[in-house]
Amino acid sequence: MMLPLLLALTDPAQAFCGFYVSGADASLYNNATMTVLMRDGTRTVLSMQNSYQGPPEDFAMVVPVPVVLQKENVKTLPPEIFSRVDSLSAPRLVEYWETDPCMVRRYDLEDAKRGAGMPPGAMPKATSVADFGVTIEAQFEVAEYDVVILSAKDSGGLDAWLRKEGYNIPEGAEPVLRPYVEAGTKFFVAKVDVEKVTFQDGAAVLSPLRVHYDSKEFSLPVRLGLLNSEGEQDLLVHILAKGQRYEVANYENAFIPTNIRVTNGVRDDFGDFYDALFRKTVVDKPKTVVTEYSWDASSCDPCPTPALNPGELATLGTDVMGNQPYGWVLTRLHYRYTSDALGEDLVFQAAPPMVGGRGMPDASGELLEQQPQSSSMNNFQGRYVILHPWEGEIACKNPERGMWGGPPDQPMPGPMAAGARLGAAAKASDGKADLPTLVDQDIPWIGVVKAAEAPKPSATPSTLTPADDPDDVELEDSQCGSVPGAGGLAGLLLALVALARRFR
Image (tube, rainbow, N blue to C red; front, side, top):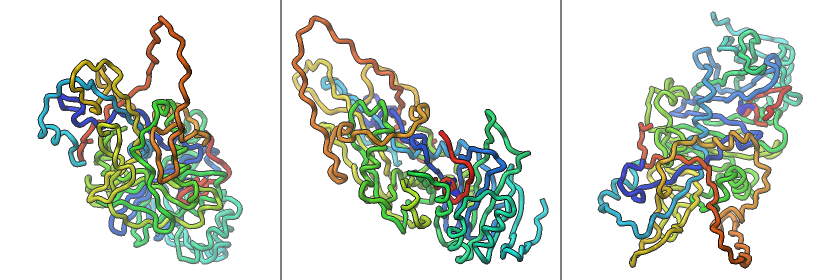
């Protein structure tokens, strides 16, 4: 369904926020639908990613909207804006190395405090189609899309009119349309002008769509998208709001466990690890929406990709909200469902600020903020940590253990975008990862106990020196302390995308 659908300090341990390894972005999931909403006051800007694959003449999108939209309310977007939002907010894997316990550190307390973290065509008149009880409230073209805004008196009439006019909507649409019609909802309906479509490698490439409207209710109409869903689906909802985190009001809410120590092997397939963690988090909670991220959109720590800049925020909606470039909180909500588990549209409500997934390991390698904590600011992220204890010689009388920083005797590595490794693999998790063998600690609040280490076999004496294991993982500087300004529901939202399914 479319879901319409730098370390600048002399000592590397002073304020090091971790080297970025990988991210669990939308490429992890075969059937993921992603949308971005911006909300301020009663205004909502809804941006819908279009991942439809199939003949363009078969494309149809039906999105319930609270008011009649005009051409100035609708525009197309560059597709890369969605990967920017996804990468910034996706759960991330970082790692720390214990520094030489005998290294002399030259910095004072004030230096440490300063480095430890900076604040984070002509419009036709309404035309009545009396035989069907359908009224065309507006009609216009936007890029390759032909758009009509409809109102209807009867869901059966609306269903019949759409089919008569050549919109390829799924069978069984009428009962799903009914509650929207009864509530007086309008319908944003789009199909494609084939002569305006761009093709790439023989496949039609359809532009993402953005609409904006004013309504007291803040919700995401998802029920229509269920008509296109098959099997397990992942819904990723990103909300941008001025200084405000959001959660769902009509489903259960949970936070993903964060700041969890994991084994070194997780670097080889972070996606499988994260999928297993997500499944365990919601295993007995079939109607639970999980918060994976809530942070100022113009900052990040660590930064898997640069924070959103004012131009990108304008693309997502600030251009119709007073062009305010800063102060927007980005919340990422993740819901996994089947067609029988998502019976209501998602209704959103303001939620208090939370922090989690920050900070350095302590001297024993422990991490705090593994569960959300109330705060005056939003700084929550899904972060998973590989620790590398010091394995070199300790030749001083008073070694200082548990000081963490970057890789020893190596230059600062170049950046790697969040999820790049997953995207290259282009596969979904098979859901079979053994979570207890992948974590380096217990997670008691979701019932995970670290697997016991297998006894090591007796070693046969050897004169050979084993070679170091190769490590070709590309890492990224976390850009610690960046500050603001630095930087299927297959129709999910509703969209009825028929006849074709997404293939990956």
